[in-house]
Image (cartoon, helix red, strand yellow):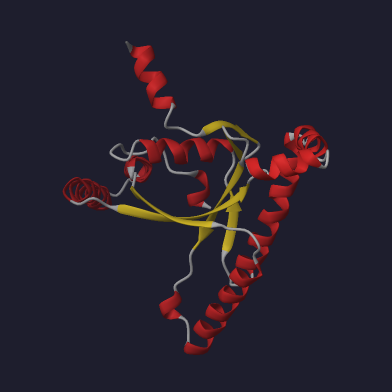
Amino acid sequence: MAQKQSGSTQQFVDIEDIVNGVIVLKNGSLRRILMVAGINFELKSEEEQNIITYTYQNFLNTLDFSVQFIIHSRKLNIDGYLKKLAERKSQEDNGLLKNQISEYIEFIRSFVEQNAVMAKTFFVVVPYDPIKIPVGGKKLLNMFKLGKKIQSSQTEQTLEQKIQQLNHKTDRVVNGLTQIGLRIVPLNNEELIELFYNLYNPSAIEKKELKIAKE
């Protein structure tokens, strides 16, 4: 019974594998996910806001492929923070400060229990999709004996070659967003697994904070 449930769940997951920070989908497409550190747009001067807006528009206009922007809201895990406070309390010799730390820990724990503290993270998904020839196009190419050549070249394209093309697109996205003043970091295998764990388990508190979120 458990195997049937596992099999049915996997049908809704399009991921085949994760290789060196690259998501390999079941249809042969690739995806790379970048985490973006936001900027406080409201604190910028009007001139700075206009420059950022113009640069962002110019960045989008220069792209000849689609990208996906995602805002991920998740329940904040403060276990690590509370643990550090407890360690600080155990090292404190001053009785008054020790009591204040205890009260602060209880305040934070009580506040989080009564209020869902959410953290927002921004991502950009860069795609690589293999070229697909429509059925009608294949028939036309076969008439001119070109279909087999194209199909052979697509078959010979290795995963490394696909990743190279994806990396080229990723570099363009990183360079464009960096010009706006944003900090971009690609997610590695562990961070991608953590991200998808949270996406497929939205009601659960994440096992730990993403390492990149602490940088």
